[in-house]
Length: 269
Ligand SMILES: [Zn+2]
Image (cartoon, rainbow, N blue to C red):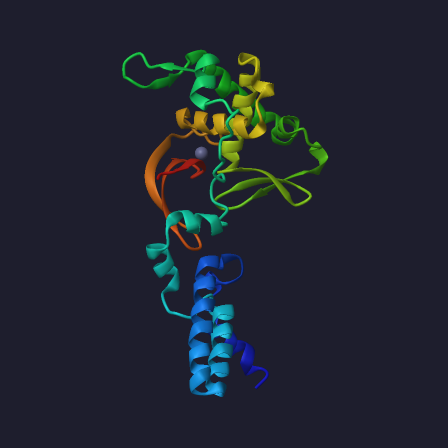
């Protein structure tokens, strides 16, 4: 019996819905349903009510939910703002809410002569000089392996304590386990560091901006990137649906065709 139990439990388990992947709204909905149903059953027959409650809790613990199809149901029927609150996926950069004192990316980039109206189409284009400098800086960051020293200077953190962590869909900087920054990929980080080097020269007030504000400007700038900082191949943008624990969202994703690095991911509302 003791040797069979773990195997049996394992077969019942759904790792894609428990542990780190647990969907909090789904769990709340299911625990509520379990409590209501068990209470009703308790009025009919106490042992049945208790047994049902125990079974429900075990199911929610092992499978993530009790009522079949809950993840799909919450994705469909729960308002997105509610799901967003529980969403702990580590995809892309967390949405930063701009503060009132923040400067608008477009304003800053225009004032710094980084972007300008395109010559032929009605859009914004990168200033040629900036583009060359940005490219050179990206190569220098990579050659020097300057990611940690550049970033620690920006964050005013101790370079020795800075740690990088690479996931399939995110690149994280941590100190003491605390998350200091997050990028779509290593390539995105290199692009930001290289642009920051140039912007602090071109824009007098750059160092006065908050780190969040700087990072919003830098990720906005990545829209203009044409080739991958990592491998030099073309970057293409397309619409994608990204699934997280309990919601699916539409994003515009810019990805490198050569090394598949995610350069930018912007959620669409
Ligand atoms: Zn690439």
